[in-house]
Length: 97
Image 1 (cartoon, rainbow, N blue to C red):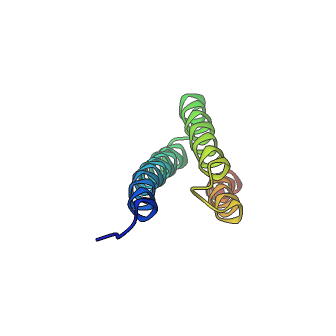
Image 2: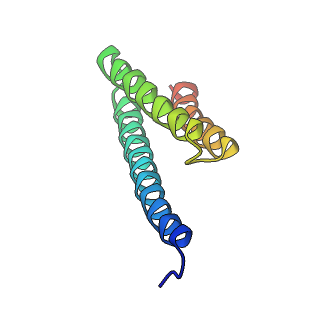
């Protein structure tokens, strides 16, 4: 147990930040999975409707990644790497068809 007021405050702050970071990271992972699933569906049947879904999911994932980077939940290189992997997944589907 902490011995000083500042240590107690630091514990509370760390817990709050941990929960916020966990929430952002979880949301990023969820949106990435949804996007990759949409890309697979688009690869199976490349229709304009599926392309629109892919674009919408990509936008949502990029937005959440950028917000996580802005709030220092993710390092900027980590965010850039995640976005590059998402773009690469779509690029591979586009080049295959």
